[in-house]
Length: 194
Image 1 (cartoon, helix red, strand yellow):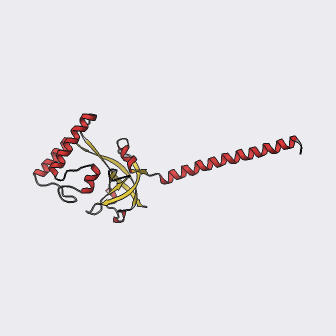
Image 2: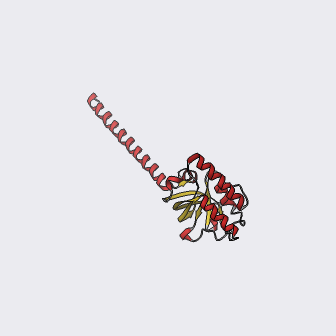
């Protein structure tokens, strides 16, 4: 074989390998993008870490359902990496959730909402207590244990909960200038049990 022919063969082989290499890189990139689009659900920890910027936006989350409200399964709680990373999901227009959600991985698409607890909220709560018209949910006036855990509450009576909220509001206002606490939850548009 002549040097010229050998050079042409080597050049053709080099072009073949370069073309194959680029094609494989493109396929790998496409496969990674497809996997990300397929999973597409945000983890609970990530959602909670970015909740302020995601409020009133539609998001898809996925987590382990640790609890369904005993009063018609109108609320479920999804846990992230541990039980301090929990979010309440309300059925909203769906009406209720299937009780099979509990102890399953559930993917929910819905709108992230913020509930603010400020002094006016606490005063209204105290007025309802005085009028003996407090809402009864969960284990009575002390509140739903799962929801209290999701909010980081430790108090057991309504009065102690109000005092705890006031202390946390004062601390947050001193640290950030915000005279309220933010609790985030989702209003579900759809869900599926994985």
